[in-house]
Structure formats: structure tokens, C-alpha cells
Image 1 (cartoon, rainbow, N blue to C red):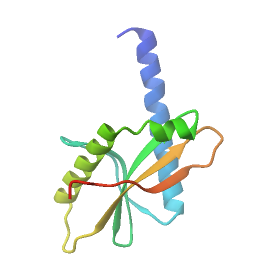
Image 2 (image 1 turned 30 degrees about the vertical axis):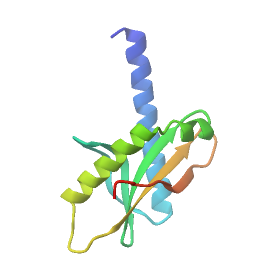
Image 3 (image 1 turned 120 degrees about the vertical axis):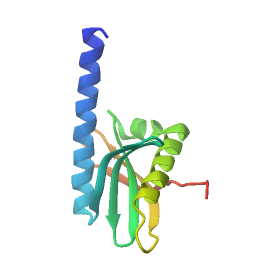
Amino acid sequence: MPDKARHHRRITYTAGKRAEWLALIYLLCKGYRPLARRYKCPAGEVDLIVARRNLVVFVEVKYRADRDVAAFSITPKQQSRIIRAAQYWTLKNQHDKPQAMRFDVVLLAPWRRPLHIENAFVDMTG
């Protein structure tokens, strides 16, 4: 891989990690507690998994120059991978009583307050 491409990839990775930390801090201030960060499994990946009361929330974090661009960068294919990863996590972390789950998005842009969109998409598989 050329040095320029490697440098760009490193900058993007670092910005993504920073955005996830900012989103987590924002959600902590809103009363959520963290369950997992950067959860990866064979089915997909989820940036943040947080909980509040009996609700488990799977959060996709997007950082772009503009929040509208960030919102449109979450494709149906990506939503499907997040949903599959959430189902996998739920199976592996089932407790005595079933919990409600939701899919949220936190959008970040420079010099803008984070935008937390609850129920940004739904699991249509059942």
C-alpha cells in the first residue's frame, strides 16, 4: 500500500476512534451505560452498545464534515450488518429476562453538537 493511502487510512481510523469516544461521553451524559465498544463478530460490527434501564441500544457513530453527509453514509447494507451483529451479541449475552433493543445513530461534525437519532432504523427480520 502506498504511503499516502496508508497515511489517509490512519487519519481516518484515528478520527473514527475519537468520534466514538465523543459519542460515548455524550451518551453517558444522557444516562446510558456502556456495555461494549467496537463490538466485532462474524456477522458484523457495532460501534457502541449501551443500555438504559431494560433497553439495549446498538449505536452507529458517523463523523463527517457535515452531519447530513454523515446521515446519508449509513447504507441499507451497513444497517443489515449492524442488525446481524446485534442479533449475535444478543444471543451471546442473553440474561434471565429479555430486554428491548433499539438501533440509534450519533452523527458528529466539526464544531457541531452531536446529534443523537433514536430508532434510526429497525430490524425488519423479526
